[in-house]
Amino acid sequence: MKKWSTAVFALLFLCLLPVAAHAADVTPSIIIDGVRVEQAGAPAENIGKTVMVPIRIVSENLGYQVKWEKATQTVWVEKNNSHIEMSAGKTSATVNGTVVNLDAPPLIRQGTTLVPLRFIGEGMGLHVGWDNGTKTVSLESVPPVIEKDEQEEPSEAPIAQTALLQSISYDKDRLSVAVDGSIAPKISSLSEPDRIMVDLPETAFSSSFIEAQAGSPDGSGRIAVNDSGMVSQIRYALFSSSPSTVRVVFDLKQPATAKWSLGDNNVLLVDLTGSLGESTAEPSIPGKEGKQVVVIDPGHGGRQPGAESVTGAHEKDFNLAVALKVQALLQQYDAIQTVVTRQDDTELSLQQRVDIAELNQAVLFVSIHGNKFTTPVPNGIETLYTRKESKALADVLHKHVMQATGLKDRGIKTASLHVTRETTMPAVLLELGFLSNPADEAVMLTEEYQNKCAQAIVDGIVEYLGN
Image 1: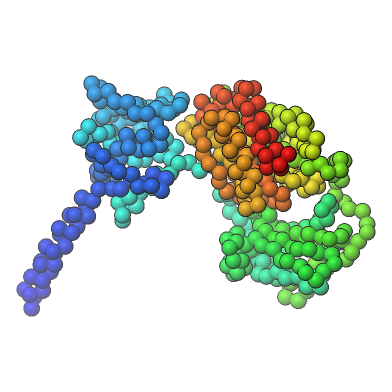
Image 2 (image 1 turned 30 degrees about the vertical axis):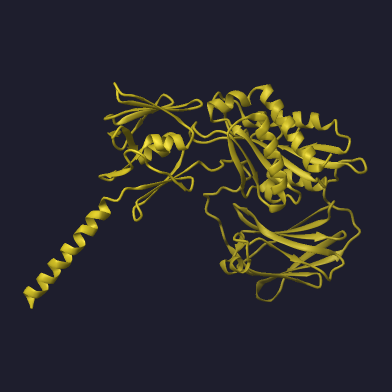
């Protein structure tokens, strides 16, 4: 019996051996921005624990120029002001003059230079992935990088959750919120239009509540109100993640006041009462009858300088310069009234920017920014929006900006940004180039480029409003 078992085991081992050997010889696939690329010449391969990929295939698919010098076996990869140089057999390369160590020296296979996969990410600013099961290399262009104001929610900070919202309902002018944990609500109000905000600090949506919000993975939602003379709808969302704060907003048909109390089982009760008293909100600016209010928001300001450019310039100054040029150009349109959130080096919170737009009943909101990244490689323009109602504005602004500037088109993308998420009118954030990229910065800091951007933004606004 023992000999029979040994023989069966040996037979199975011999049958599986070719399969294992074949798996080890599988040529890795390369996918760039979701598209599988053909590998002419020497393909990618595994050498020890290092994945080696053909630099020419990757570079040319991303718009880089590749030059090869046979005598020194040196390859140059160039795009705008970005330069990469490496040589076969050497364990270091240079990126824009900076020496970078390699996991393994470049290899020459069938006239093709293979370089370590990790270097592709470091040298070109790409997100690099390796699936050992499918032997697949994935390379993705860098996503939008937003220079956050100090008030913006830090994405990596742990969310403090001392209470979990389980359910929310509204009936007969009373809001009921079931919360697991202790809460200390804060109530505030705004006018034009009339709203009441109920903030729940140190509170987050429970997982069961989020699962019940169909099509809203962050838990946000709204309640349509059809039987109230005071409330048209109720909106709720995670207003801040540091500290974690849930905000509930009553959209009112008339001025009202709110008082809260705790019911059975720690249920928060908010009761509304019609009011003819004065609003605590600041008044909107005086405007002429029939004018459409457009809010232009130059990002950052004051102690929040934003991105620092290659030569040490501050993003806040670039943003303000473009915004003031937009304001000057829009003055020629009688049907448009322009509000700029800051006229100088003033510091504003993100919510203050939103409030300015809401208080003035703006028909659209445009935030102006410059982009940055941790390496000088990424470049170009991208347009960001959050809510689907803002997509049409994003489309028309992006079209005009790209036609006017000629920089790389990084596309129109969605992003959960405070000023585009919390505003109720169509809202867009424009990233008008990378201050961390030498080529972009060189043109961004010129008055000619800023004039082009301003005119493009105005042309987009005018087309969108139909003026």
